[in-house]
Amino acid sequence: MNNNPYAWIEESLQTIHRADWYRSVKTIHSSPGAKVILSGHEVINFASNDYLGLAADERLKQAAINAIQEHGTGSTGSRLLSGHRELHRELEQMLSSTKQTEDAVVFSSGYLANLGAITAIVGKRDLILSDHYNHSSLKNGAILSGAKVIEYPHCDIAQLTEKLYQQRQNYRRCLIITDSVFSMDGDLCPLPELLDIAEEFSCMLLIDEAHATGVMGKTGAGCAEYFSCTGRELIQIGTLSKALGSLGGYVAGSNALIDFLRNRAPSWIYTTALSPADTAAALAALKIVQQEPERRQQLWQNVNYLKQLIKEHLPHLKLLPTESPILCLQLPDAATALTAAQHLKEAGIFAPAIRPPTVSTSRIRISIMANHERGHIDQLVDALKAMQV
Ligand SMILES: *Cc1c(COP(=O)(O)O)cnc(C)c1O
Image (tube, rainbow, N blue to C red):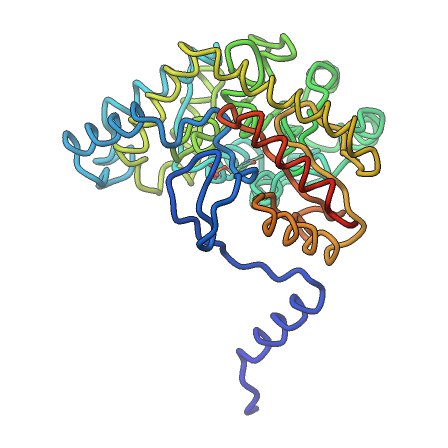
């Protein structure tokens, strides 16, 4: 046996290239904002999750700097050993008050919050029903939990019900998991119907509010608020890394749930506590989300403006169904999506191609922010008009 055991890596990379699935990083050389410097060129930024424009806000920066001055850069240990600070607790209390849940716990990222929560609450004897379009962190959390995982077609309540009829009685606990705003499509899960089904079949329901936190609902509390489901028993996951302009994740829910996670979620117990700077920045962001609803209003005005322009000027492009600041234009294949993204970039627009394996159909994904100006959106539409696809 003199085969190089690592040779397959090069071969796999070749396959990825041939399928137009190859990806690489792009460098941004400026502060977050509506305009950024991408590989040396100024572009209007439609690729950011910074929906409220908080990632470069002076108050977040100052909060982070103050936290570093007071607590240093690292939190030096896990929460249960030497990593816990009063700041963490303040942030958790602010999250649970925003969400109107009994308690909340912060993780080092949204990804880790999903892995931690799912693996803690279900295991080998249990069943997970998972929306086919769910985020990677939900899917991998489900696999890691060891539970039986069944996917249901995207937002298909009839199919979900059918599968529960067939399977529910064969398992101890059952957990339904779903994005609330679907990250690569921009549509919403049918939350009230999911809550009813969960109740009917005695299932827990976990929603991932990553793109909804700060964005959806009157006070920015997410889709639970948007659908008037605040207060119903539910496990709510989210991130501090999108509209909140920081880094980290959270789970919000009942006292018992959160206390249980602090004792059983491995991705919380065995990892270093969120850094003081990230914690303080997220806390400052949550206060702004509460105090400045005009940011959300501006965001939605921008979303509606773009939707209107697409309808009027780009009837040939297929806009996927959306009720969020994420707008996707469907394209026939990965190569076309890449060409389109390249064309947009040359026209000064940063809107990435999203391709398999992230999604099953290729698209240009546009995310709108509160700090976009009308002129930015006009330029996007002009560039889309000129695009030959
Ligand atoms: C971004 C995202 C995550 C991961 O959150 P991070 O804090 O970036 O790790 C999880 N779920 C969904 C739906 C997301 O869009």
